[in-house]
Image (cartoon, rainbow, N blue to C red; front, top):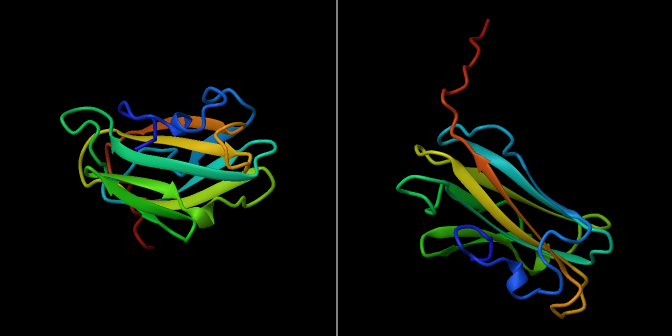
Amino acid sequence: GHTGGFGEPTCYACHYDAEPNTGPGSLALHGLEAGYEPGATRRITIELASPGMRRGGFELAARFATGPAAGQQAGTLRALDERAAITDSAGVQYAHHVEAGIDLVAPDTARWVLEWTAPEEGGDVVFHIAANAANDDLSPFGDLIFTDSVRVPAATTRPAHPRPR
């Protein structure tokens, strides 16, 4: 529970050398650019980039943004490879890196890929994410923490499927 959402702490709780989002770098969540179709499955990518980063880590949760279910799990998350895992805590799924996932995929870049199946019904979903651009010195100093939240509305209509000609 270190995503920064709904009152949770972030990675800054342990890696506290610089305030979150103050160092050079970026955190992006790709694949959620449009509203979600209820019950549909999407591939989402977390990308962390920071000059001089030697290792990376993240934690993400998808929860209903408002209404009576606010803060509760929205849909389901699934790790697609050995770089990430899903842990359930108090009914909320947390996607996070594992040891195999701390290695960079390119210089100064870490990336993780997940699958999200949207809820069958409900309102807006908010994805909270926190990530650590680590210097790999095994201390809480010198690491940069980045956070973000992405709010995704439910599509008001299902996309039309073209008829075969």
